Image (cartoon, rainbow, N blue to C red; front, top):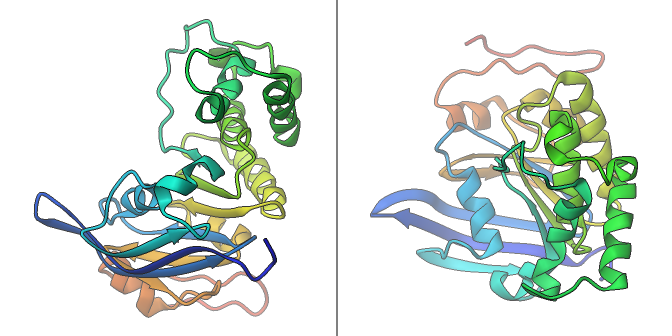
Length: 252
């Protein structure tokens, strides 16, 4: 893949659930090493868009190509960190076991992990600065540490595309900063899409921003207009541009 390769192409994608419109005419093109943040209200279709890219939801109409193929055929090259990783904190599963689970798509169920699988798990833990915790029970980690483990699980398949659905939820502010800095490091190796409610964090760390509320407002840049935000959230939104000089737009 070269730097100009298009990783994701969505054209006029619509999704309906039981006749209810969830996504409307979505167009989106991302290239290798893009880091896109998607913001928008609850119920606006953000998680659905992630599932469309994963091939878990089939559009009512429109076309989608991921890594030059169908989402289903490209899924093995996609790392995914869902919004909520449900687990029993008392279940005796180690960090090492959780990360190795990310190789199941390659090795299949009930098959032994190879030396290569284990090396990739070690590399993923090292990349997320969690190698020293590999023998720790997952339930004994902090929220931020657990999220790093789940990202390592998403990275262990050596993905070309990483999808993150509200990955910083439940993480304290200090750990969030470290977490976003990790993503900034990872974007040199892959394309990243992150769904988030945190507009300020998204605006600092991502390269491009899209607003989604059934329709996608996207300009292939980091610029957000007050009009885009108001159309997305259906109300006036206060926008603060960081730096000097800064400006404050309409109050709620």
